[in-house]
Image: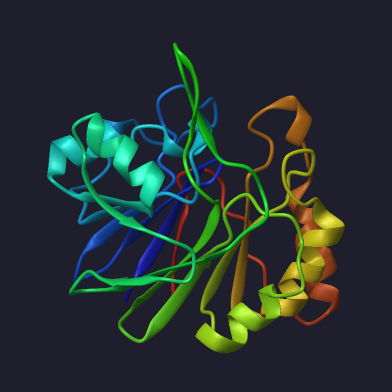
Length: 230
């Protein structure tokens, strides 16, 4: 049975008998991180929703360690490759067969750039990421605002077993909009992410869980390091 572990902020470790992947591996420098890069098991893929430093994180180092491809928009994948990573460049709406899982990039509303000593590098469009393995699909929404086509994405790619929904506000949707996002997607389980790492995104995940619960939905509030099977 596949398992996901919330590693803090928006980082999620995905483990299955067929292979392992990690979403947005911001571990080094993350005050809420439950793992160091060395504690992450051998990876088959590294999945990046967009180019901000609190999502790219340790992607290049993990790719070099394991030979695992960074899967992201073409511009972001190309930058990671220039730093020594293995990479698969894609674009919004495209899918990629890993052999053991299928990855699809879908629309998200945010910004996307990577800051270096020389300035900001354009890293393509931001995305949400769908991963399907063993007939089950998880949906990491990335750092998105609310938009109505979340419902279309769920209908076209569902049913969604687990959705990782940002609730932090300020940089992404807040709790009220996250509840509507849940309502559009209707996953079997929702896990709140992208909150409480820094003061501007301080939120109460139990309030999100209560609001979704009142609509008949299920939310798992995972502390950093906590896992769930699905």
